[in-house]
Length: 219
Image (cartoon, rainbow, N blue to C red; front, side):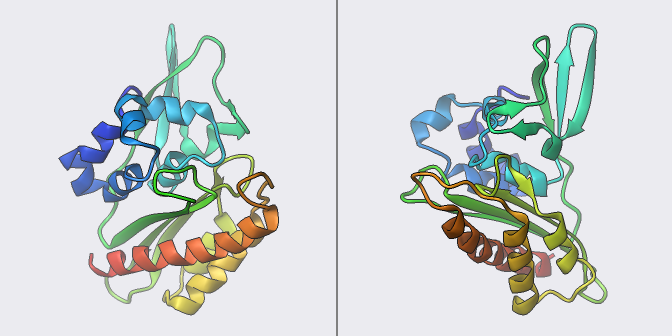
């Protein structure tokens, strides 16, 4: 439900069991006071490019349900944010639900972000999902979601293609990270220049990718 608080997601045993990356992400999302009051729906509808939640939902292949009097529609989370602070909601609509499928076996997911201090707004963040073939270890599927990399939470589709069909190692992760950096068009602001963010995207895609890969190998 859209009114689920961040603290509930962080502490939920069900979330920790099936969607561990969500609980991990929440630990560095603002302060405990904010997480006690802030909701998943409010965070998504704010539409900020540096938010932690949407990139994680992108790699989890999530959808959102949007409701109004007399009807509803379901769309991919990656299509919900249209521009900075602008989301796909009409005046008579509200976001009511977030739908997340259970990850398939041999899938590893991780999210890492660059921040000045724990709980601070992310300068850049990277979520990576890697699914391995149980027989030959080849990457069957991959998703990469970025924060602070554009005016919207960005899915790096070209970088994903570098992973899919490959036996993923550190070199492949580095190449995918470079592609993700090239796909990005990060803003410059008081938190960091566009050039700095591009370099950090390379670092954090690779860092999250390493964790995701190890988790995928564990089944």
